[in-house]
Image (cartoon, rainbow, N blue to C red; front, side, top):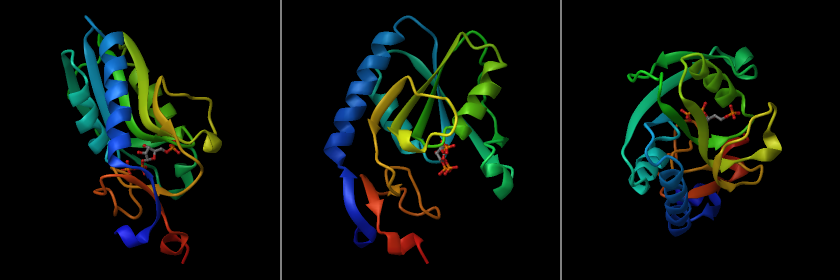
Length: 179
Ligand code: PRP
């Protein structure tokens, strides 16, 4: 897998430091509140697993799985819920945990769905932000770091379902995806 990388963008130690900082901020901001971390599968699982351990206040976790309605609507951001949350959202402070905020369409749609269920509050925490690619007006409340418009994989992020298990975030060599 390493030989498929152009470079390592964010190494393991840097990731740890970023997540430690996010955990500290979230712990301070949500002290005394009913926090529910919502992970959107699958890209965010590794980030979620590390972030929740960097949070030192009581919190619950839940998972959601969505799929877009085929190629045409990938661009619309309209998604179908494959696995819904187990928790009741009403009255809880929701923090959506994502690996990357790209065009913003997926998160915008998911946030819209969750808002209708009357949570006490709803915010977004993304490990990576690619602001150059944004197509809808949405920003995360907690951002690990911004990344340039390059093909990033690892630490949960995939190409063709591979590379998610890399312990760092790397840039894929173009010859891997340009065929
Ligand atoms: C990725 C990522 C976000 C979304 C961001 O998920 O986890 O959910 O794309 O893109 P957007 O801002 O342009 O909507 P993906 O659909 O690749 O699924 P995965 O998490 O299973 O890899």
